[in-house]
Image 1 (tube, rainbow, N blue to C red):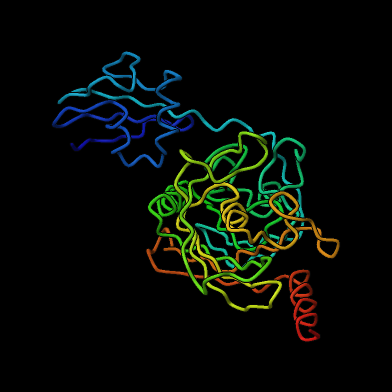
Image 2: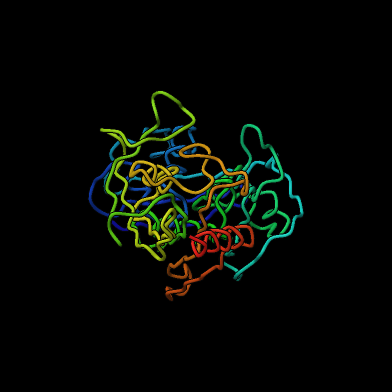
Length: 314
């Protein structure tokens, strides 16, 4: 099915889409147009009455047939209550489409219960004011997340097109996300894959757990250094479930150093030892393969030094 598209106002943005052939559901018809809107955004616009089929409000399940006129109105983004707050950020890369940040541990990605401000999003709004409204009000520009106490590389979209493109790459598992982790004990194998479904822990809703019927979750790992009581691992995600690496390693009996949720807290480190050190994807504008790497932050490097000294003294 092809269509004609004509923007007729801004703000709000309005589009008139003429169905030229075939017949399909309204929501699928809209998803096939070049509108720089996600399926969830389109679904919300339909439900809120911003989509007309031949001049009448319609449901997503209604059929669009040859000659039908679909009118779409995209309201201007509502002002966000998330305020810009300057804070030092390590910018690894930045252009008109995206910015790559090396996030420190202790910084939440977006506002939520218990941390309404002073998050990465607040800092990004100060660094890149143009991202306001990109992909949502509360999480502008965010296409993937890191736990508050996980450090390392994150990519952030600076345009609607980049947000759609990067989100699609993640969904299609075309993004490389590599981590370094220090875990307790010695792994039975030098490398392997952990394939175990992850779901919300029914006994503690603040935790995740390996559970039958959970969402598929796969993590590849290899041992970088075996230090008797501890092992330094490099891990790559094949899926991106909440707390996936932490849950999978605890499931194997090798929880992260300092992980007070899935293992044991540490007196020498006020976070868990997990660092997103490798990020690779295709640039959303050029299609060029790009990748970035990040060294261990100082607090983790110091832990490694201490573990190695203890190992040498055995």
